[in-house]
Each structure stands twice: as structure tokens, then as C-alpha cells.
Length: 140
Image (tube, rainbow, N blue to C red; front, side):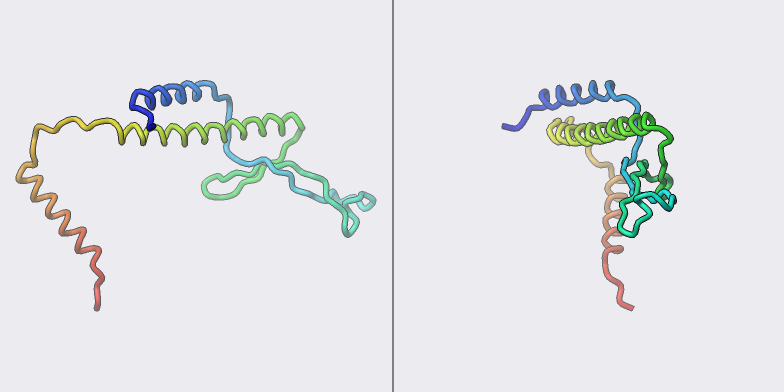
């Protein structure tokens, strides 16, 4: 059985309460990239040697990919927690949007006591004619 309007509103209230529990967050992905250290005697310098893992935060800034490395293990842990919290924020936002859409579909519209005025009708007809004209292919 589909949830009622009151049940959906209660779910929305619960979700909004969860937003208040969010901590510090930032977008991105923490990943480990193998890098060679440059020391000739190190295992990573051999032809088939594995590199040392370098942990980085990858994110987009103004449409460009940005990479950030961490000076300490505690900075890595803190950033990983912030990224995890960001993913929680995104999930909550998606859930909130879905519930709001369902509420909007279920909420009854208020009865409209007025009808279209003559000026509104003309404007609407002009809009329809213009939009039809744009969709027709032009053969020249």
C-alpha cells in the first residue's frame, strides 16, 4: 500500500532532522595512487616494482580536476571522514527530493475560483503557436 500524505510528511521531517546531525563534509574521493620514490635502492625502482601508495583527495573545482595530498596520516583520516559525510549528505538530499516529489503529487490542488482572462488566453495561444513554429523542420 502506498504511503499517505501524512506518512510522507513524517518521513520528510525525520530526514530533515538527520541533516542537523551532519558534521563537516567536503566533496571528492580519497584514493591511493602508486608512486615511485626515486631512490635507486628502493623496491619501487625495479622494473616490475610496486610503487608506494600516495593517498590523495580528488575533486572538481570550477570544472577542473584538482588533486590534494595529505601531509600526515591524521589529515588523511579526517579528510576520509569528511568525504564520507559528504556522501551521506548527498544520499539524504536524494531521499529528501524523492519524498518531496511524492508529497507534491499527492497534495491536492486548491480549487481555482477564477478562470482564464481574455488577455491570458491570447498570451497562451500566442505561446503555443510560437512553440509549434520552432519545432517544425525548415527546408531551405
